[in-house]
Length: 507
Image (cartoon, rainbow, N blue to C red; front, side, top):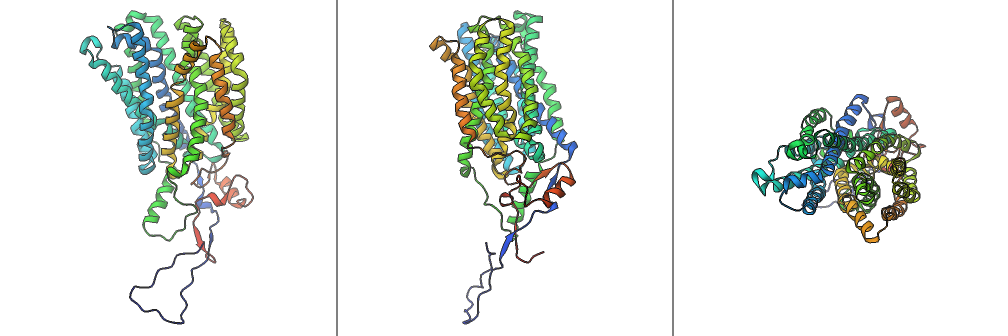
């Protein structure tokens, strides 16, 4: 590559026999110590805590609304039949997934322009406020048809905010974490998600047992939503103390330097969302596979245990709680393991386990004993932990810094709307259409095969810098070693780093 020289002033006659000035040859600059980000350990912990609590709250809301679906239908459409009430509640639940892609795209675009931290503070505030306001809504008996309409509006706001939330927090943590521990750091996000879902199930179940169904209808249903208020306020306060990511700051500095006319030769062209379409397809499929299994275990399983197997509603809920807690713990194991062995091996193990264990799991659940049901649920949790446990570290590492947030927002939320949120409906429809209690198992097996094939098209990212970003390490000593071994390090590809070019002979 040659440097660009300035043209001669217009209108000046050329001079015969005089050679035009030659462009100075350039070469890619070497990686320097100043290029490497040394992570602040205290800030990393604060970042993990501030983002994980947002995920916990998001799934807490999913859990409480899912477990209160029958109650919410009776409160907001008391004059309708029981069937219509349930359909209304499930329809309102589904509306959040309609709004999620829009939230992911809008928040992602803004986050790539003005910063991740500002947008994430906004999404968490909106999410907490809309959940809290549901607890304050007047009922149908007080304001008539306006009550269910207001519920739909608040759920749409929740969907919009959560669409920007998960894409943002995974991007945020990935850009704060050191390259060699990105799996460990990102695993706390989904750990918080499943703890939040379990917390929602526990809160609703305890209230149902203590207050009784009539008291829940009379106003007890408000309590789980109102709890989200103080949790959300604390989470927002915590998140406001987190600094912007080093990768985004470097991206902005490079953009400002380029706009200022600096003679830089970027290592790669500025990426666009359209140029990432192949990666977007791969990401959507991986999200679909992981979340089909996850939603089958979380959102669909209580319905399967009660409607198909005849468990009491409370017993069906309580059986899933210890499995959710176990899976949250397994996710914390999967993340750091993937830092050592790679993301792709964990995904293949997860897909293989889902293919092999789905039928035995549903056969055990179908026996109808508490011990066999718990064992079957544990078998389903194993592949989910392997795939979901590395998802938050894998997906952000697929996309360059300049379009990472919006790419995540698009891929994750569109796939979740098409496959994750529809899993309970599709699986239940298959079960009723075929009359087979193993229909859910076959459904999961099909996705397992698709997921195993798709992993072949995924670039291994464990231990490597994020696309479009400089390396990130834990200590200065590690940075010194990285500079010294930059020509021999298998996790470091100098051709992909955003290193400027300098004239040959420059020092």
